[in-house]
Length: 124
Image (tube, rainbow, N blue to C red):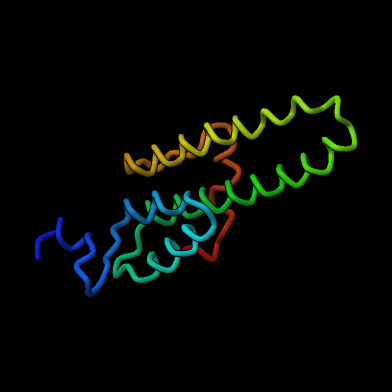
């Protein structure tokens, strides 16, 4: 099998490369878990996959915390309902993360990505 065929499903196994793992690490927590498990299957540890696993997990945790805070704060103080636009900002940042992973670049998510670098030691 050549390299192109190896990365597609052929009925027997599915071999993910680091680019696929990097992209999948941003797609919900289930996608992140699958990417994490598959990254452990790589024979050679890949910095790109680990980097985007860190970014994806950090982004997911930040999104959960922001949504919990907004879910509590907005009903109490409806005048702050404009803060719901934070969700749109997070959506745009999420797309930037996926684009960086698809381009195989180790660039942090704009504005917030530096917070997640080297914070999750168990991923290494």
